[in-house]
Image (cartoon, rainbow, N blue to C red; front, side, top):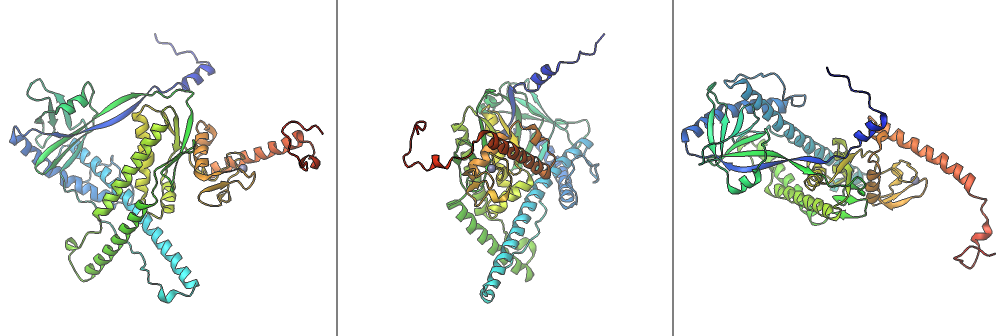
Length: 485
Ligand SMILES: [Zn+2]
């Protein structure tokens, strides 16, 4: 008979809660596994499947992109299809994923547009105030609604319900890929042969259930993924290093180091690219007015822009790697980036760097730390740039400029980003702060702490400090030892 376990003593419970995490799970992809063309009939069946699957996925993608509410991959099927329920569900899930990222990108672009509008209005008002309106030639920004994504490349992001990888007993290839098809009860089995480096990567590792199939230039490719457990080597007493994600530098640590920057050359390139895209958009609008059909209009997305985005990402990765190399034994504490804070940061960057790219910084930091077996935690970031680490006073006035932090109450002064990183580090383990439900509660908590500091500070002054003896300060000769007067 099973007995109800005895209630654990409080101390025991605490010990369990604070037990060190010993490993972290990393999901890695194995890409470019070519499907064998040994049996052309099988791949033709795969083509046939995708010719039904893709249009269905497109229907849901369009629906999700145009809907008022955010995509829900669990909705009841609403489109007709000859696919099985399981394949139908996979199509819905894939569409929800595509629509989600499209909506985020659109949202960010729209935000950038609104920033442009605000910027334009400011410039115009300034020109008006200075009586230069007659020579003010700047074009008012326009918003071009983005088109819903069109799925051109046959892709299926499947799960174990419809796509199973089985080891093969045959020596000529390594796996069977079993795919549910249009014919019920008659799955397609395609042989898969791995390259030596794939084999090395997958050695003794169970697959993850998420698998992708795609066709490019007439060839079918498979992407597998696996979970890897990485032991965490960060000691419990490891130094805590705060990391601030910022504008002047991608990363600033509480140890006073800075990594990566968006300023200089990269910012100039972005500015040029934005100007170019604006010109193209203008041309496009002009041609559209003249009745040029939509599919013959020039595209406003630029190859340079894509190259620049890639470049920014590479720079971010480089900065993250350097930071990790410099702090191998640390426990990293960084900010939990919310959409609101990303917008705030992105706005300050004059929309050079879209929020999606900014979001890449903490993502990359988390991933790189995991790979290295380092402990990394997120903390709430609200007011981390305005809070005084000494007296907890929170106010915008504590930031006289972008670079400087100077508390208007106690006078504490520091480099703004170093201070913010230090504040983040200090918030690790702050349960009271973590429990706050919103920004308002956080501000209230910090101001309570400031009040407490003020009371303690005042009572300390009263108790510990004797009345100031002016004569001590007026001594003409500086003395190192105790005054002998
Ligand atoms: Zn202060």
